[in-house]
Length: 120
Image (cartoon, rainbow, N blue to C red):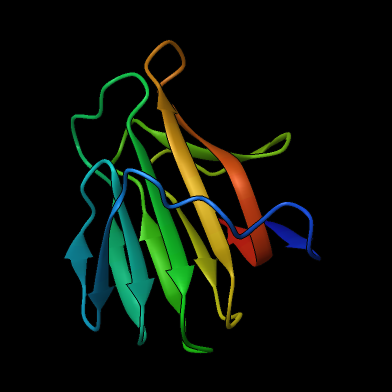
């Protein structure tokens, strides 16, 4: 388990070209979408991503938001990586995580982060 806290600088902004959604229960995320997560929930990353697919997650709650990655893929924040089929989670109001998929290493890379996120 790895934990990350970024204060300012790395987050916010963006959104151009994204379709934005308000979510209140578990859902499957879709590329080129941004999500306001408004309650405790699980968001599943796509099971067949392509190079450059990107998704933005914003925690609009202090409840637990969990981003699940399908088995065989991981999430990387900085030099830390989740387990295969693991997740990233936050209980931090305002936490933001923008992920971009790289098919060469089968990793969802965090390219923008703010708030507190934990990798499992």
